Image 1 (cartoon, rainbow, N blue to C red):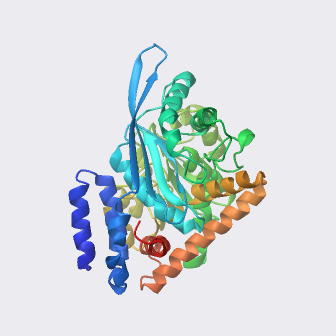
Image 2 (cartoon, rainbow, N blue to C red; image 1 turned 90 degrees about the vertical axis):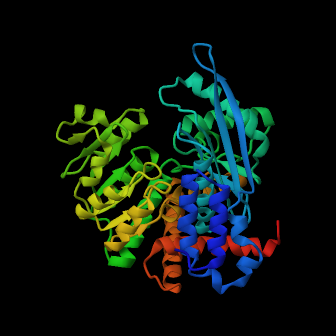
Image 3 (spheres, helix red, strand yellow; image 1 turned 135 degrees about the horizontal axis):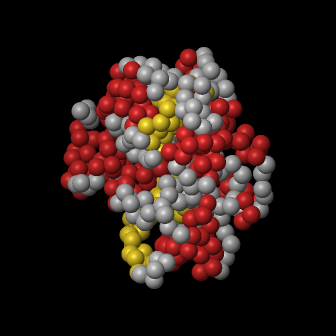
Length: 447
């Protein structure tokens, strides 16, 4: 229940305008509940219509994507790009290829990205894109033809100082390569308009690992500040074994943790003695599923129900798969299993009910808009390298990423203290991100 009559009115209007867009409404609801603590203390927020403008994307592009499969049949998908807010810089955000993609998901991702990018301290606005295309099981030729058709429309809306996409769920190095190659051909220029590119054509080292590494750096700083501990000796469970999950597993292990459980759509694997995370990464690099892990290493517990991961006893949980994967019942299992900290590695993987359950049970919780920011932070570093025609070493990129994640944590924590909720990083992250975007919007007038 919102205390601010202004926010109540705006949220009611938002519900009417965006009926049926459940993911977007969920993201908006979390944001409004956090800034409810400060809105009435600054009359300019209402006078300038700041929240009304924030809840409406600057631009939403929807387009047809026709392509030809290997059998010669014409297929048609729907493409999206939301250019959500550019108050602090050009639009920046990934590209998701998955059958679940729709307008609600693209808008929620762009909305979250706006505040996530603000928290990095980099001059980047929020954007997101994608399609309901499913690359799973498609040949390289089919993926290439789809990506080229997708870019044939989208290219006209992009630019290194306009909108800079990247990869995301379902859009990895292969897809980014095809999209960037076609962009380069039809624009007749080589610019840093994509991040997550291959090293051979302007990409940054550690970009594929950045979100997972950043998640671990955030968790390490959070543990140090709130409990005087670190990841050494901690038992960790991780959902999702793609770029984020597998990289988080590798980095957490290097920091002394034991990865006792992981999952993907094929199921979950668990071992009290710790999983072979390098083998997990090898499976993922080869686009294979975790269900193959027990065939090679039988000393592991396997379940075809990936949600059984949340029943594994652990100290820390990293949900790194997709939105709303952790429901209330999963949260109850996580708490029962002894988990004392949850850090979101995906975008909004926990439902509001799950988050409330964690907080009620004194579980330390880090929202994705803060803990998941390592990917876009390193994308910003890739943009800097492209602009300067430089290539930094892995050590340089890693050091900069670590400092950015530490800075994000302390910004969120300081903000939570300032508004009277010390350690509540949901409140801290939303308010800290909002204040930066608000200051920029206020300075630039009504646009």
